[in-house]
Image 1 (cartoon, each protein chain N blue to C red):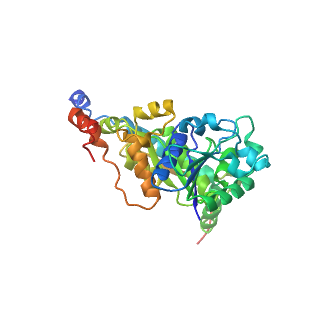
Image 2: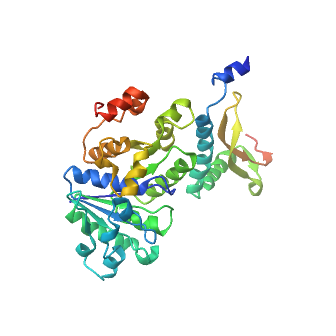
Image 3: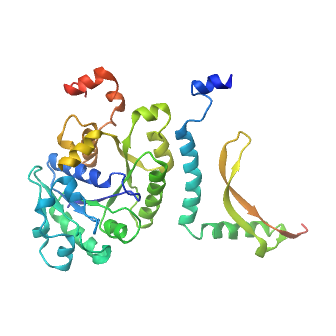
Amino acid sequence: MGEVLVITSGKGGVGKTTTTANIGSSLAMLGKKVVVIDADIGLRNLDVVLGLENRIVYDIVDVVEGVCRLKQALIRDKRFEGLYLLPAAQTKEKTAISPEQMQKLCNELKEMYDYVLVDCPAGIEQGFKNAIAGANKAIVVTTPEISAVRDADRIIGLLEASELRNPSLIINRIRIDMVKKGDMMNIEDMTDILAIDLLGIVPDDEYIVISTNKGEPAVKDDASMAGRAFRNIARRIIGEDVPFMELDINEGFMARLAKLFGLNK
Amino acid sequence: MLDVFKFFGKEEASSKDVAKERLKLVLVHDRTNCSENFLEMVKGDLLNVISDYMEIDESGLDIKITKTKRNDEKVMPALVANIPIKKMKNR
């Protein structure tokens, strides 16, 4: 039986959807059967980040309302064997689904897949409650900003109140040049404050913008630092012991040259 | 002299330290707000302990979490209780 992981953050715009898309693709690349669920009803986005927007026929609300069977709504990603998307409804309200229905859906999906990743909407209201309802584990995404860390702290409290204990942390969009100058909180600053286990560090990477433009997850590209960080996270999720990335590597001309030729680790 | 230090970025707190301090303080508040009856529980226990020694005016009791400056200029969260005493108990 599979595992249901919810990817959440409280604050919007910290990279939940990008994280979900990339971890989902990576897990599939590792040979796992994965379904990613877009739980952001009314603001559907995971489909465009994955580049699957043209293939949607049915959505999650159709499944819950019995308009279609579950399998009919699942979109198979042809680029990543084993990856499926259950899209959100775009024209419905968050209240179109109840936490109980979400739980039932997740239970059904984890019978069929190794990993069920739920992309949680921003906020702490109904959409959040729905998204976490069926989850076994939570991943909290934050960025090194005071507002994002504050919201992450609030979310951790709410997750624990909902019996989702020991969430793990992904720090997204860290800029090592700014950390070195003392103008950005470092990893330790944030793990100190939030006091949860670190699952991954993802450097700020222009390539994410490009890959999102194209609808191709960054994990496909070896040159993308962020892509590599997401692949590492996926390996940690399946239980491998992967050391945290050396972020200094993108410094200087020689290092960049080495990266270009794929010489770095 | 100070300007030279400033120039080398040694004396001035880096902006991330400012962020961390501000964040810590705001979280003290957020976290206590998360559990509504937290302060009430502290209040109740304080009353129990203190009333062994003195008679206090319960209606005038005020307890809150604020910040305070320590001797080394560091700002820390602090629990401040204002407890009006009616009279001391003879022990």
